[in-house]
Image (cartoon, rainbow, N blue to C red; front, side, top):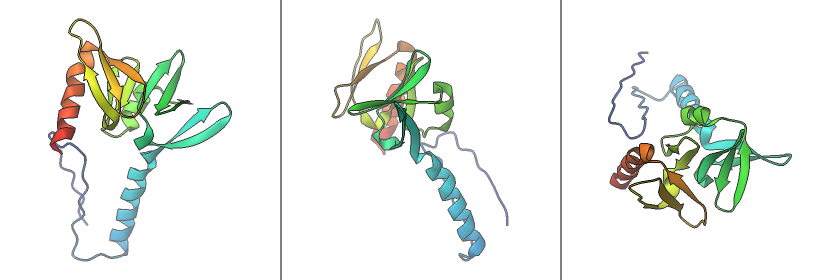
Length: 152
């Protein structure tokens, strides 16, 4: 069995292709292993007081630093998490993007961006009153991510 990794810088999302002459036990094990690795990050452990909950990533609007902790915001609630933002950047899927030193957003939930040329721009979310600010430094990356998503 050969294993080959090809790097393509213009991919929007990583893709794994298995080429085989037949589906046998080894191929099924490889497929299962890949599925397990990619599904591990589909939920993330969060805390509210002394209760640990497992939130699906698709429900999360944004992560935001709050003093020495990181808050996880969903449409109508806030949880805390034990990860730091730099750790989250490494483990979250590409749909999540950093928009300031203190915030990572889920690009799927962005409803609008109110641009401000001299200061941070306002980001609002679908079906939520919550809003955050994208700094001028990260604004272009956010726009690029949103434009990529529109092409899909």
